[in-house]
Amino acid sequence: MVNCYFSGQGSKRAMPRVYAISSTRQIGRVSFALMLMAIWSCSNGSGTPPLGQVDGIVTLDGKPLPAAFIEFIPSQGRVSWATTDSTGAYHLDYTNSKPGALLGEHKVKISTYVMPSPDSPNSGKPELVPPQYNCKTTLVADVTEETNIFNFDLVTGGWKGAGSAH
Image (cartoon, rainbow, N blue to C red):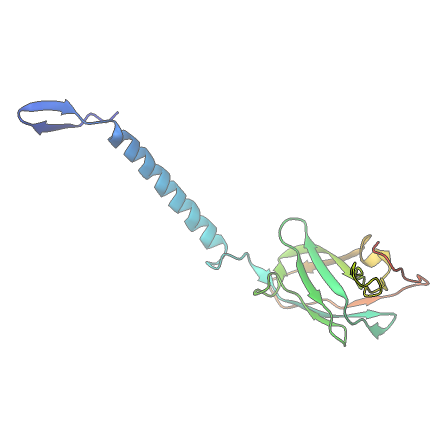
């Protein structure tokens, strides 16, 4: 307790304990503000961790793979994604408004499977990509601060495709 006195009509009375609590609250507020400043400085002030721009082309058996969904999966943190265009080209997004991927090593999954709608059983799309490139991926990419180009030349190697996810 802080021993503070105030004078009033000739008597000295101890101040209420509120001042001791107030100084504890101030320490908490300062600590919280310092923590926010540290987080802000680590994220370059944008609230987003450092990202690397990632582009590339995906082919399957030497031909562009359109409408394939690509995921870059870091060991920790948010997954980045893209969908290939008609030429097999992609550009990764970290969020809907931030392009790129977290820095570091990522597992990469590529898939063409689209689940059919319950209302329209023929609306889905089959998986054209072998399991070693999606559910059992062997693909790895190391994203750096530079512009990253990762082209993926996939081969079916006799794999016939499937109508369901792997």
